[in-house]
Amino acid sequence: MKNRLLKLFIFIFITAFAALSLSATDESAPTDSSNESVTEYPSELIFNELQLSPEGVIAYDTLGNRWRFDFDSGVFVPSRVSDEYTPEITIDPVEVRCTEERRVQDYEKTSVLIGYDEYVDGDIVAYGRVTVKGWVKGNIQSINKRVVVTESGQVDGGIKAPEIIVKEGGIVLGKQIVTTPFDIPTVDSFPYDFLVAVISLTAFFLLFGFLVVQLMPRQLVNFRECMCRHRVKTYLLGFLFVILMPVIVILVVITIVGTVVVILVPILYIIAIALGIISIGQSIGESLSGRIWGSPKSVLFSIILGVFAIMLPWIFTSMLFNSTNEVQFGFGIFFLVISIILSSFPVFSGVGAAILTRVGFRKYVSFADRLAQEPTLAPAPPPIPKEPPIITPPPIKPVKPDTPFPPGKGPLPSDE
Image (cartoon, rainbow, N blue to C red; front, top):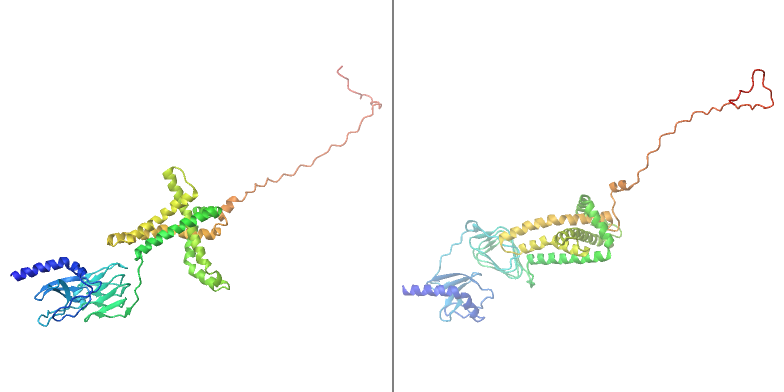
């Protein structure tokens, strides 16, 4: 009874300080006096199972190796199962025992352990070590560490890693490709890369806006006026040309000078999108500055404020993607959709306005505006009626004064 209590106490003590014991040991492991050979401790040795057996304290690491605690030296030493003690181990098929689904985030930075009763319905891509004791229905790729398939593990796909270890009994149905590890920078995962890309894109829009305000102020006015007055037309036209961009590139390539000017096509698209972001940003900035300070600020300040407002959902989305919490990651997906929808208008409208205004070098006037600008002619007067013929009386013959009047006819008496 005392021996069992002593072993139980030692077991609890070793469980709490196993990691400290390993870090305090030398690089080379001591040798067991019976049947263990001298072995170096792996640099990534982690115990995930401890047992109290008739042999003493037995530990199993993540690689499936067996270790025994040597009370004389106070450290774990590699151990094989002795002939006197042979435990009965029965491994059920993965279809029977793997009932718990495990979800692994892409580009996982920490070690990944698929338990004995767990399965992953898909691929695994990680930067760290991957240990499979259960069932992985897809491919596995570790960028910098090893992939270990234990005696109970099964991988339906292939494995790519700098080091691949498949224990006896482990199953790998696909190809095993040993790759070359590479150093991961400080920003070493997709979410951080996403955040850096968003911040870099924001800085590009701000710099481009500064250059446009200083060098092309009139073109910016034409561009913004076209986007604001013809929202539907610019959006639909831009959407059409974005969809047809591969066709446009192919048509340019097959021409005589296509190989020379084909690089200009994506550059023009980028300039059009940047102008669209800047123009909408200026409108948003003027609205915000008017609400906050009571009056709109300068054009450059409005552009800076509006561009930050447009890119803020993307920054917030990238921060949510960086979280390992599934709820926050789900919100990240939601905000990603919202960001795409909100950004579609300046992107598509920018391309449409660039086509209608020749990238701002021509003021766009629609057909309705042209009709409104044409001067209207005055109505013609009614026809003048024909004048009646003029009848001239016959000429009066003058009377000679010395001619005597006939009898009875003389001049009329006067009133005098």
